Amino acid sequence: MAKSDDVAALSTTSYAILGLLAIKPWTTYELAQQMRRALGQFWPRAESKLYEEPKKLVAHGLARATKETTGKRPRTVYSITPKGRRAMAAWVPQPGAGPVLEFEGLIKLFYAEHGSKDDMLATLARVRDWSHERRAAGAGISRSYLEGKGAFPERLPWLVLCGQFLDEFDQAVERWTEWATGVVEQWPDDITKAQPDFDVLEAQARRYDGDGGQ
Image 1 (tube, one colour):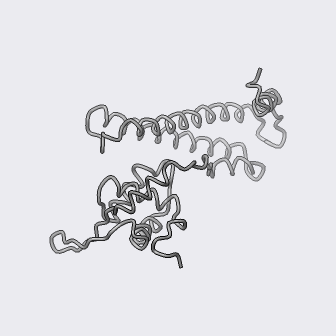
Image 2 (spheres, rainbow, N blue to C red):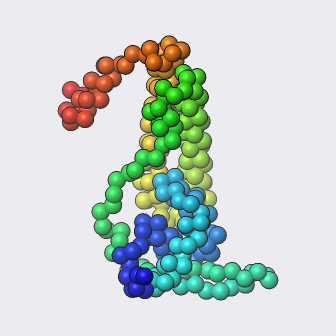
Image 3 (cartoon, one colour):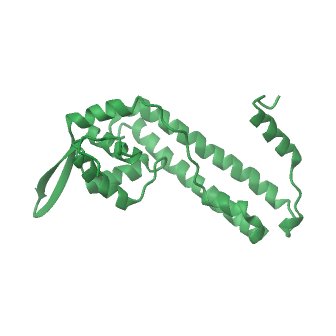
């Protein structure tokens, strides 16, 4: 078992929770809500995992748990300790890993020969709906800050950086979905008779070669 002062075993999720505690104290329920709302678009995690993390932070001395009562209902509120703030200050400057893509719809397209053309178009339609939902949610968050209603506006300069990445990602998914739908619509009903687009393949190869497609 890790020692209480050993932070090497902490995961990125641990630090994500610790960062929220650095903003203000939260209950585990509130932490789970904030993780879904604020970080869920780029760090989704099972809710059961989120409920365990605060206890781990307490065990490492990075957070403290305080018992409170709201009416007749007891609750535990977690807050960051000075050691927790030092841990965040040590972790944030370290290089972070790049994105990891997890995309079930793309797996279905990868194995398209086990379905039909209509199945592929339905999968692409679901992805398009997903991108529209994401764009709508992102627009609502951006608008709330413009109207002075966003949470923790003192953090807005770097929140805008994260929001711009998510916006460009959503736009990329939407553009790809529109392109892929147009391609598949031109295929014969028997997709095993479809022909690859070698112009697109050549363009991909040039970009991967690093010449920018020139």
